[in-house]
Image (cartoon, rainbow, N blue to C red; front, side, top):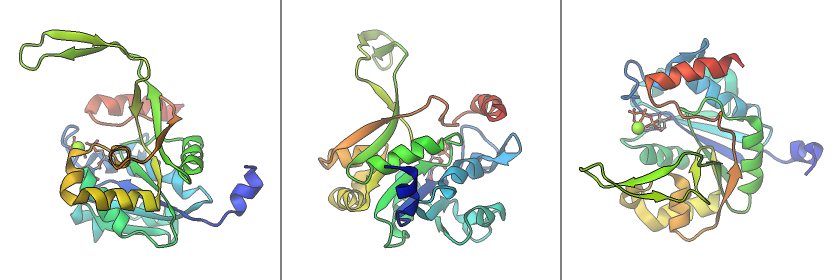
Length: 235
Ligand code: CTP
Ligand code: MG
């Protein structure tokens, strides 16, 4: 598709941002509000979506205390296309709360973790294109040697061949009908065991395709990840 035909497409993509965690492993204020090189992590995660012409609406699941008193930089970035909802006790519940608040005109849904502040415009573009027909999950090939280990004893049971193994990142994208049907099938109790929305759609029998992603699109989980993030942000 040429850039011209793409930009003339109607905005029909809804973006759900999972930003309702408490960031316990980092400590202090919820990590999504912490600055990386002077810019809050949530703002970094949000900006490339807000800039995409296909994006019609952004729904952010926030910790309940922040829904009525959000940081003022949020609205300036998305100019009227933003909706804030209270997240749930788990990431899966937060995503579902955001999906329920999504405008009917969004036929493709992208789900992104606020803890991934280095998502590229190119990844977003490819996920949107793929997600018009199937599930799309941005991944990087596994490069470490993998060991299966006996719980408790620490004994290595086997070395797992890494051929064909990929690490899943976000944003994951889906046709809205597919995602809603998968939720309906598993119900609210069923989703708590699944670690991402791709797993939900796979379990429901839908096709999910890999979109090769960059290793830069890291998830900020621990205090040392913020050190890496400061370096990445300088480049
Ligand atoms: N998340 C969410 N709702 C929750 C839990 C997590 O929206 N109830 C979001 C987080 O804000 C984050 C993403 O899901 O953007 C990935 O979760 P994780 O990295 O585990 O973040 P936290 O849950 O905040 O961190 P921790 O597990 O250390 O408390
Ligand atoms: Mg967590």
